[in-house]
Length: 325
Image 1: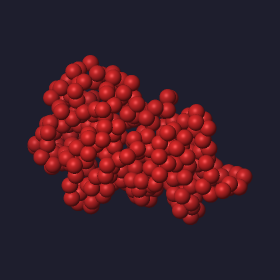
Image 2: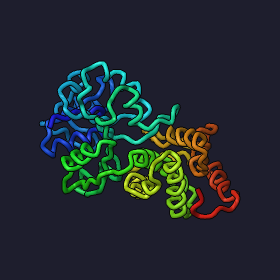
Image 3: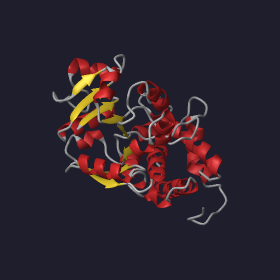
Image 4: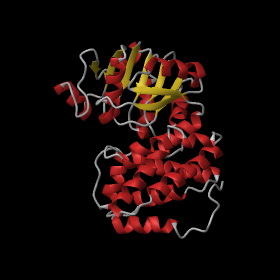
């Protein structure tokens, strides 16, 4: 298949590498001024992968999108709407779009597939690819499980069957709302986990349990299946997000608690804002998300004491039944 991967950062470069190894004809696109693109152009590699000679690296967006049967997008979630305005200038109505990114539009609370639909892409042409796994592990041959979801049952099955390998076992998603919200929300829990690592309070077990329950309530209120919160997109991704040294969101929380600045992208920051928007819209209690949002968007100089105070505030809440709605 002819596939173009738009975005050649950490995850995008891996996706191009992986799909090329599956025998596909792959273009890897990045903006000419982007650091990730320049590194690949000048050296043929980045800190994660070596660019296979079968992959065509380009900064020509028109060439990338017009030649592809499948367009895979892997960029910052908050930049998706503006990026789609550029893409929709070209004849892409018959293209399949696969979102390999995890987030919610902060200002609107829209899921990323909704952003594509509002940009003019048919829902029948949209799929999302999410789930656990770090590039550093994949390139070492460590396998993992992921999920592909879509409103189009035939499309998600075709993609999962086409992309599967001994490195990634794909499952067919059954709830696009739950898959997208769950995938985005796990990054919020990752930030909380990073702060806990600094505070040295052994609460990751409760964080996983209460975090998944919190997200399940939101998914249900939005019309999805609350059980999706316990699948690969959310709870199944906790190991790589809450514990791994490779997790950007966990590292963001750790450095935040130390009063230091984390320079890489941590999607959980904007996602905490988006989730609070959705919580108010649907009347859902999101206590962990609220604490993460307050710490992330609070005053400069957040440190261990502030994070400890924020976490302690959760313990002063009134008693609830464990599985309350």
